[in-house]
Length: 226
Image (cartoon, rainbow, N blue to C red; front, side, top):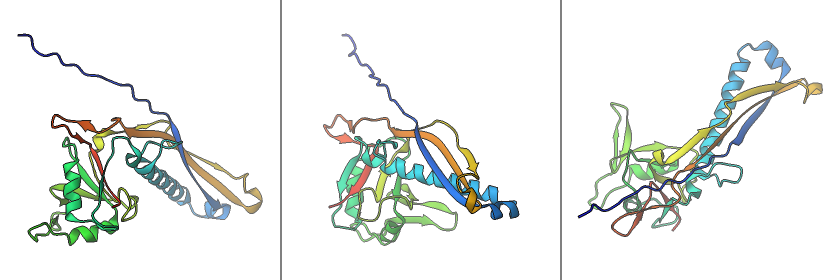
């Protein structure tokens, strides 16, 4: 007989440039008397832009900001067992909702780390694995753990995230531009330095992935409130 027909459906993804900017005010005296001031200021501004992007890629709501993972339609949420807690069962339940593909990682708030270090499985074994000698990253249930100080606070949606970031697209627009003006605060002998760029991002999935077992799975699974 004839082979069954299959086909792929492609949809168009549209990324719209969104501006991210930072500025700093410095005294003219500092600029004139410290030759390394310009280098320091530029590094600080670039760091501020990167920090703003990280926050937007996690929690942006598409209103003038990227579509963050925690606001995405593809996100699956797992309710935690207790308020403000992170338990072994929570992680196991998150794994059950995860779409296995590529190289997933755990992204956690730094305040979650002490809870993970002390966490035991049902047999009383510590589940945190770390190789201090080789410097290899710590693993949790066989997956690397990334500590992110810009993750939501402990007890909030997304303080623990299991993710495959190959399903998140970032499109840079205008590269970082740095400009300075001595006119804004001319009477105060100060210079305003600003940096800005455009960028957009978001998951390229419009929802969790349906599988043959009748359930849906996602490359983004976040621990939620009880």
